[in-house]
Image (cartoon, one colour):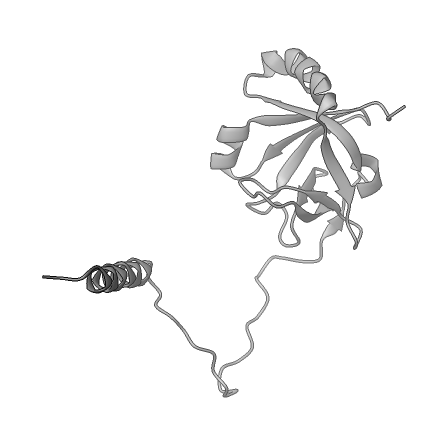
Length: 173
């Protein structure tokens, strides 16, 4: 007869083995750091230069916003009204410590500091440091000071989230 302690130990070993198999199937294996200097330093990605400044400043979008989204451009006016109604529970875009804005990336629960980035084509983007446009960036489709519309660059995120409409909320009285 097997005791409950032995059964628990066997179940824990089985779970650990299954986890090890699943992690091993992810590919690449595990690589430990090397203490030798035989490998050359990695070079920068080709074609990525310094970030261009955006034509929109971070302080222009810091504040409280009503938020909604649309897929069909014909729904834009209705969606702006729905976003305005969300001001009772606003989405807050904060100022970052290094000149960016505090916002969420797609599918991330924790907001982080993102940069406003320009591009040679004149488009503006919000996203982490790196190439513009990056997979985690969102394009600023339009901004007039009161209404900000963005769209994620990543096709999957763009399909799920649509065009994000931010309507500036009135200051608290």
